[in-house]
Length: 388
Image (cartoon, rainbow, N blue to C red):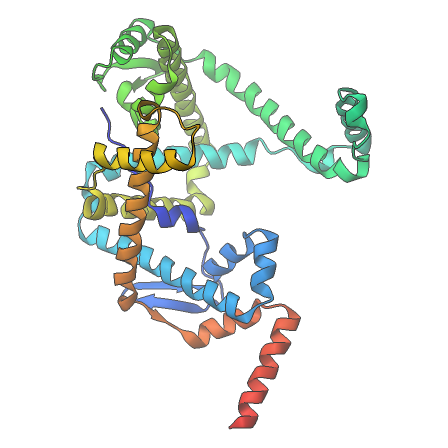
């Protein structure tokens, strides 16, 4: 049974943004062989929710703290990636296998985004009004009393129709690809039976074919990512449902193989976007695997800890189900908390290796403040100069 490697917590909080270095880029933080440029922080800043971004833009101190903390954590991640390379993580089979899957997912994602993106300008006001009237016709008299006017929801309706159109285009594209996938019904039935009975699965068993490519149980397990077979087993209520799960997965993987090849044929893997985003995937994998080996390898939560946490939660939540129903969820939560503690502690030790460029940070902070915040900072600098 496959072990699931948990995602590095800091990565999920910060995210990674593939940015090419631009002229005028400032180096905000550096370490040996590592540097964090202002274009990366700028992209993170611009992608924040409007309210959060506004709060930062109107406060010199808040913006400064944000930039320094983000630059430090990104530099730490780069340092860990460098340590992972030095430790030979890139040479391991786990890394190579996961990178191969990451490349396929990236090719498909970029291809689908480029190929099946409907345009808002293709929708007329008449189409939007018709959709509005259709939605309105489904509402009760009571709901219609507070039903918004057309102009108030026009933008949302437009986005919904754009997404719907793109989805319809994609489904039409996928239909003939699905027909080309040959499911090995006998193998699928055998795998489903073993799975339902709780047996270990043979990852070499072929469950579908498309052209010369064969999809195995091992391919399916790898595609699950952070979802384990134990998670799937909790959702499967019968042997028939298990068979449906494996058959559908075999079909989807066969479709993915075809889309990957089409994306390659159309030159997606030669694009700048693919190259930039692949670098970030490589970095994420290096960091995840390195931390798994260095910090999480011996991490365990025993039954006593789970029971103690259950009793603690039960004291304030009388509706909590029996321990047997929530034990796995509580265990996962305790593991996540412990992983975060270990990661944060490790990041703290890396701070000594990072040099923050305060002059560049001040420059970047000033550039990204609102006019009022800039004026206040200028006044503060003037007061300091007068005192001297």
